[in-house]
Length: 112
Image 1 (tube, rainbow, N blue to C red):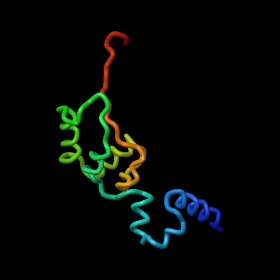
Image 2: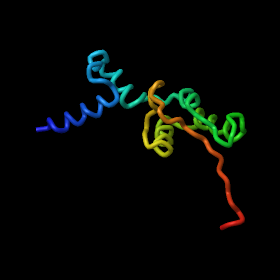
Image 3: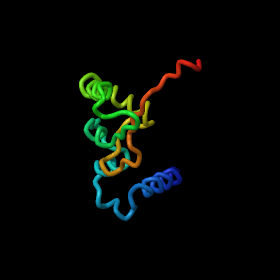
């Protein structure tokens, strides 16, 4: 009854992990490789962040990381990821195909 759905899931998973290698992983390793890590690793996010027009040493960037680390709950961190990335988990170390990018915000006061 659900063979079609299982085939679609297997095809999707095969696009991430070669099906011949599935037996090499336990369920937890498969979850991490497919969905990312459940726990929010701020250092991993920092390592995979690029700055365009701002510097990692700018006061507001230091403030941002401080808020993320010391004030946000795990749920708020997941909601932040969903807002900026469309997902609630960070990829595993090797699966960061797109870096987190921090850009400046410019306000044009001359052209309302």
